[in-house]
Each structure stands twice: as C-alpha cells, then as structure tokens.
Image (cartoon, rainbow, N blue to C red; front, side):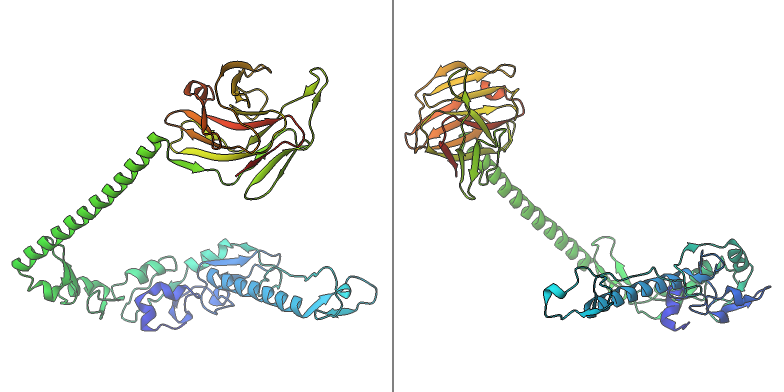
Length: 436
C-alpha cells in the first residue's frame, strides 16, 4: 500500500482499498502469515471469511467485496458476449449449433440458456458464503502496530489503530485558509494567526479573510449592515408582490366560482353499466353510447330503461365546478337523465325525462315519484351542457339549441351525500348519445 502525503491527509483512505500495510506491524506473539489477506497481501482489516466447509479463508472485507463485484461483472460480460455470438439449438440429437446470423428465422432456436454461477471464493472456488471466525479477531487483537506517521512513537493495538491515526498529533491537515499542511495539534494555533482564514463579522455578517478583516472599518461595517437591510427589504417587497399576485388570482377564481364560471371540463369519458350486452361504446374524442339490444318487459308490455353511468365521481364539497357536454344523436324513444348517490341499484336517484318531468327514487324502492314539472324538454339533435356548481350546490342542465335550463336543486344535491354520479337511460334500440 502506498502512503503518499495526499493519503496521509485522510488516513482512512489507507483502509478503503486494502488492509493494513505489513511494514506497520510492530509486535506479534504469533506467526502473522495466517493474518494476511491473500488478495491485498496486507494485514487483515475488518476480516470476513468464506463459510464453505473446509475453507474458512479470511479476507479483508473491502477486498472480498471488490473481488465479488469484479467476478459478478465478468459473469454478466461473458453472458452478454456469449449470447450475442452463439445460440444453442434445442435438443435435436445432433448437438449442432446455429449462428445468430442465421438467414432462416424458422431455423433459429426459440430459447437461449446460459449457465451462470455465483461469484466464487478465491481459495476454494465455491460460491462465497460470508461468515466470521472469532479466533481470527482474537489473534488480531493481540498484535501491536506502528503509527503511519514516522514521527509518532505510539504503538496502538489493532482495535485502537483507526482511532489513533485519526487523532494522532502528528497527523497533517490542510489549513482552511492558506492550504498549507499543519500538524493536527498545531492547526488551531496556525489558523488563529493565518491571514487567509475566513472571518465573519459578528455585526454585518460579511465574510472576508483575516487580512481584510483587520482593516474592516466601522464605516464599512455600518455600510454593509445598511446594504444587508436594503436587500432584506427588497426581498420582502418581492415576497409581498408575489403574495398580492396570488391573492388577485384567488379573488378572480372565487368570483368565477360564485358566478358559476369556474369549471374543470371532462374531456375523456369512460362508462360503467351492468347491461354490457345491450350498450355499445365507440369513439375516442367523442364517444357514442348506443343501445344495440333493448330489454322487453313482458309484464309491462314495453321496453325497460337501461342505465349507464359516466365513470366520474363528482364531489359535492369540491371547490372547482365540473362541466361536460352531450349531444342526442338518435332518439326515437324516451331518455332519462339523472344523478345517483352510488353506482348500484340501491341508491337515491333524481331524473328528468324529455317531457320535463323531474322524479325521485328512494334507495330501497324501484319506482320513481313525480316531484315537479317544468318547461325543460329535449329531442333528437339537441346538445345539452351539464354544469355542477359546488358553491350553489346545484346541477344545471342547459339545452343549447332551445336555450332552456333545468336544475337539480341544493336540497336534492344534499341527499347525494359527499358525492354523486351522472347516469342516462335509453329504452329504444338504435337510440344513441354522443359525449363531447
């Protein structure tokens, strides 16, 4: 191991790549050969051993870790090169091999198999299993070492070696000012006198070399304090300006919300329905929901209304409103437009049909009861805009073609709880809606 002055500045660098140099051994009551790492050929440092039967060879921890990493890297490289140059054909009895450049794809084998092994112990050549041998640690504790600094006469034991070389008074450390090497026990005295060491003024907090600090006048200090205050004031004004801008943006946003003009638009639609055999959903930007197979009710002697839901939970306590649009592409039968508290049969529903009748269904019932009737109507070709306004707690539906509006009122939205879903029901085969 080399002991250049650059390494001596940070003595731990000596132990990061190998063990303790053998020439630092001062005294040992035993033969030291079996305390030598076979990789770096130095005295073991933080030893670990191979746990394979009849091996138990000890290595420096850093040495064996590097060995394992190098071996693993070689295995990966060999596997990569091997798989690129040769492909082993499936067992055909001929043992033939095919080039990876074979002209016929049908002749190429379907699977590559390359045997790999774990990194091996340098001694027994078997997979390395990390273990510890207490007797090796006990033997290492019995040796004495010399300090890495020639001037030092201390002979630390194995366990005290690392602590000693860090605290040794003969350790040399660079001055934080001039950069010259100083003995560790003389560094503080040197830096207290070095003109290049950085000093911070306790009043103006300006940092400068000791040489400049000695000529740092009261006038300069006061001026610097004024400059610091000016910078602080400028930063505060900048922060106030940023907060004012954010405040204005929030005020504008609140005004829009109060007017019902602030909305998040649903651009991408997905749907849920239990009638997957009856509905067809097609399209990307605009999605068409089409009833392709009706369900005839023999008891009522008419088609049933079949629900499908927009898969978007609308939160009643949200800050931002929600808007979405739908065009009635084909409508020969009736259409129910509604909101429900859950995506299941047991939910509270409110609906409006094309006659403008608003009805309500309890969660434990299967029948709608009329609440009121308005002038809101719709038919084939109409475009409807849905706007949920959380501050007003209402869902507004606007027929853009006829310029008429219907609302699900706050008392009805409150019954939805924390959230609700929008749903639609068709009854006539071929009727379809397009969501845009």
